[in-house]
Image (cartoon, rainbow, N blue to C red):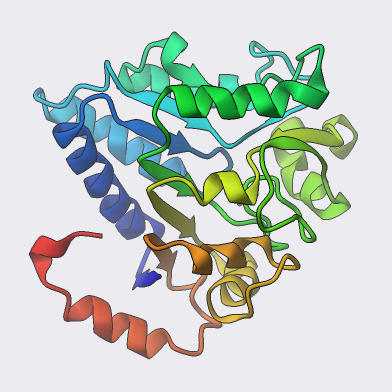
Length: 261
Ligand code: PGA
């Protein structure tokens, strides 16, 4: 696991965007795993700027796959993650709508929707780079504490804390759905490169638990320790509780520039 501590979330966005642009240049049909929430917004803005300033960069053949979706919200509902990612990223990058994939929160057969989505992920060839945020309770995608470390895409119930954290997008906590479909931790581990972004002091404890704590279902994001290629990009505040911060800074400062992340 590579832990990179930078002054601001904009600096983190620059590193992640460079890795994504490098991927799309070398593999125009790349599969990009995307996350919703506030954390990746600086990255998405930076990617959109990058697309406009580099005429040789095309996302026309890229597939975007989402981590999760609210149950009960159709694809046109403004708070559905599918509508959100189109508005925040994929439309502006020029990724065609039929190449944006998400679990269907209105599927008639919710019990088997996870399996259908897993088959879809396999059909596009698996995820090349997966962007991740982290919940203040340590959740990864919508895998709340206690989620099996080998879980697959399935129905989950949100904690009260997550519903309160996400109430800002809905205006009222009562409007936040109780149920979601989410990629499992085992599903996420199959992406070839995981990039976790975190910013702000509200994430500092969860980041510490995930990066320096034990591997445990009580902190689902600690499962990242099991993956062979993980980059954790943190702003100063999100890194504020890490005990090995000095070592991570030293390592980054001495890394050969050609190596990338
Ligand atoms: P946030 O959400 O980026 O809006 O903080 C992250 C998450 O809940 O995984």
